[in-house]
Image 1: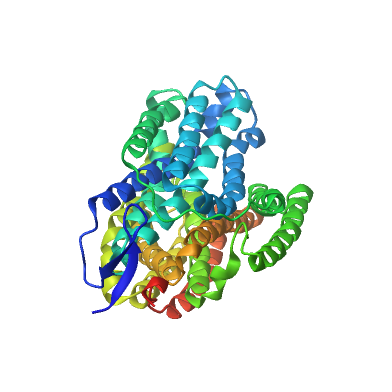
Image 2: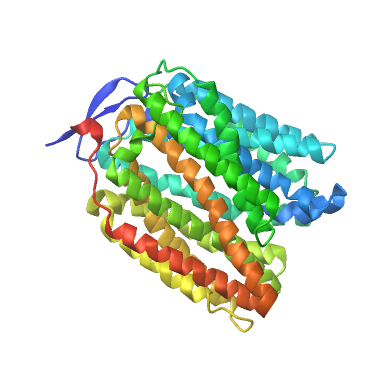
Length: 479
């Protein structure tokens, strides 16, 4: 019987047999607390999308200004996430959790009380700082606490946070805005955030060991123009429907600074003190899985942006019904996550990821033939099928990619995956919205939407190729 080395809730190494074992109650408490907290912070990421029109009226601001509430959040995430590898190694689990949820709760309270746009924008930036830390913290903790034989099942629960929460965001905000002012989007979230903070403060124990690496301030400074410039440039190019001078300049500066950032990390790796350790890419399955996640996120974000436009402008559904139409897909993805995780533990990644990527290509192709006479039930059915395909990709990709990393790279691997998801989301949105805008201007709204979805389907073919390269990985600690 093979064994894997893992840690208990206090970071002490223990042996876990390859057969299914019960996890210690303390470990379960830590993971459940982090899951709930992650769900709440990711829900908040998309809750603003439906409210932008209301905010323009209530705060007397124009569309480009109000868009900064979403853009600022995205930029903050892109800048903070690369630093989480260092943060998770220098601070205890408990300290990182209290920092993340403290920032998020404080930002939520400030947003609820915001007298005007600038304070609301500041509040969103503070919220994003906490949000950026939570997912890498959750992933690193799972890798540290959960035996290899059960990682797929536990990682499947992460799908609930990263898929159901964004899907619920527009629906929840639509219901709130139908009955209350925009401030209640934050007032309703605040008690849940404070409850998670209180439970974590009471029950959360420290996981793993603290490192002693030094903070490289030049690397931190480079993250702002590097990741911020790339995400801002891509998001604004997409938002403006074409390349303009400022977004292109930001993108160019971002790419140059990103190259300098990478060179800086390669140099610091020799001194064992990188801000973001890129040696995770030395593991082939980590690289393949990260690329697969990038392609999947481009498809997911494209669908999230384009489908509401189609439902509202072509099928003429009101905002609340649009949110409800997209809800079954998000719920299906979340509910299937744990089931797929258990199947993954038994059969490995290959059959799941190949099936999921093929489903993604087929459903995106179906979206590319939608028109004015398409039925809402068919759109919902295809979105559920797309969500099922993405669920078959996410859990195996996360688990297979992170499994082979040695413990000192857990936090860095999680940070790299999370950072590239943000960049992929911005890139996917920029590309598809730009194609949509250009074709719409020449041939009409429906033609633009069809062209954008067809492009997404072509990109998704790359996921089929990457999925075929997937192989089951062993935990580094087991060798």
